[in-house]
Length: 383
Ligand SMILES: C[S@@+](CC[C@H](N)C(=O)[O-])C[C@H]1O[C@@H](n2cnc3c(N)ncnc32)[C@H](O)[C@@H]1O
Image (tube, rainbow, N blue to C red):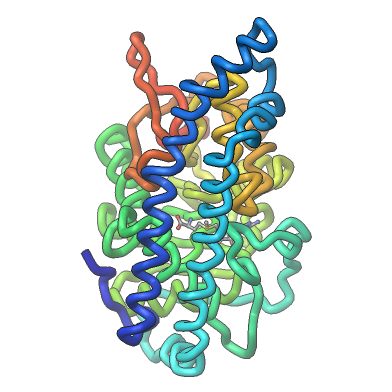
């Protein structure tokens, strides 16, 4: 399967393609083979040894960590996972840098666009964004290498395709398609006139809403200018009218009660808790009565020390430190704190697109509820 071509998608030479395919395959090997193997090492060898030594099971995440770090298997597979990630950005980064002036030129807004782009060069970039290269992506989403830069957008578009080894689909949009489709099917009374994507990035999850709700006006806000420029050019190339603007999702200039759906996808795990709360508060302000707030995740996390440890891999090894805070709070409580009525909150245990096969497996319990896994949506309706 190949990624769908569009005007600003970086193009690879034969050798660049071969190297990038190697990086994708290495990541796939880590995710699908090495990582699940760590659970086998824990359950089959380390846990029984710990119980023999101590007469009890590990009491917390740290004890599980110490136990796993005794093994060469775990130390080596960790290293491989981290190296695969660094190599991936390095490889795709070289490809993007080589053709950056060309991509910048192609991404410049054209006459008579179907959507729109609004940038704000004075927008303050919060410290939590400036201080962490999320996902080990050099420069994070916001860094501008020069005028009209689109480097981060191009790097992320091609990089995510390899990162998920094509599992996000040819347009990296499976998560957005699944979200929009869920609402269309299960919240059928909602006929949205305006839809807003908070932290829309390149618009992977924004465009599917326009396809499913062709009469709705669809907006995306993101703090990072290179993402917004790239998102606009990509959407225009696909001929999908989206209104992108560079804004902080916690304080937008959009009017009160303007939207019928405000959603976010793959965003809360990159934010400190106070920012998640501020984004929900802003979402509440922006929603019309009866409007829908939706975010991915939010399923009840199993709290056993080994599960806690294994799900903290990304925080510890993939520069995603804020997932630790996210795992400690209840998103439902944060939604209530933002003003929503707890009675209006509902959760879908639906398995979203299989993003990182093997990494976040959800389990269906006897009562039909789904626990764990990076799947499911948390939703609330504004009174
Ligand atoms: C992993 S990307 C997800 C992009 C997109 N939602 C998707 O589904 O592909 C996270 C995005 O959140 C943006 N972001 C982080 N904090 C933000 C904030 N306070 N306001 C707006 N965007 C933010 C980042 O710039 C980045 O583009």
